[in-house]
Amino acid sequence: MPAPIITLTDIQKQFGAHVALKDINLTINSGEFFSLLGPSGCGKTTLLRILAGIEQPTSGSLLIDGQHMEGVPANRRPTNMVFQSYAIFPHLNVEENIGYGLRNMAVSKSDATARVAEALELVKLGGLGTRNAHQLSGGQRQRVALARALVCRPKVLLLDEPLSALDKNLRQDMQMELRALQRTVGITFVFVTHDQEEALTMSDRIAVMYLGRLEQVGTPLDIY
Image 1 (cartoon, rainbow, N blue to C red):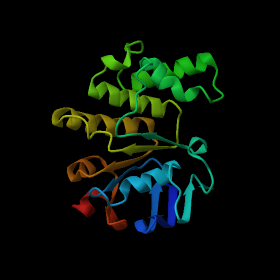
Image 2: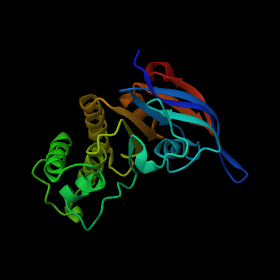
Image 3: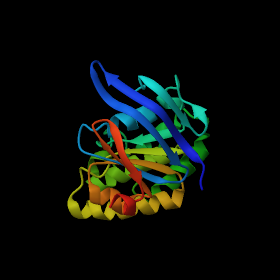
């Protein structure tokens, strides 16, 4: 079996009197496409934000790649995140958007250029590097967001409902592309969705969440 890359132990999260996460105990394996599935308000995005370092748990422990994450800020974690809104910088072109995260890394200019070109090909945007952000379709914006996250070579990619803004046909196409991309790069994807079909189609394993708790964790066949 692959070694766990994420281990959550007794994670709790409160916002004032509201308990958003209760007794979360979960391991996610290296190289796994893992989905957090549940309705709005179930805690799945809160859990993703804790993995990213955007939120801190009220109690419990989190290990990523064998390292405790307590006190480790988001920019020092071996993770990167694709937001639901994609968060494309409107004043930068495609290449500049993708290479943005490399600015604060110890990467030479030539290496950064090569990595951006590699990421463009990986997400099927070769030849569009100089296109302005406002000229991109919804599917292209999603690919730019993916490339910008992958170019930094994280060990875990966190995806917060990245397909929800796409129309049905494009969404189905991108499901297959995203799964193929994960197999190509071989890193762990943690994917948040409220769409049962999406989770069952794409995932190696799924955690079903409800009211801040894990109700079931298993393969798509188990969950079905």
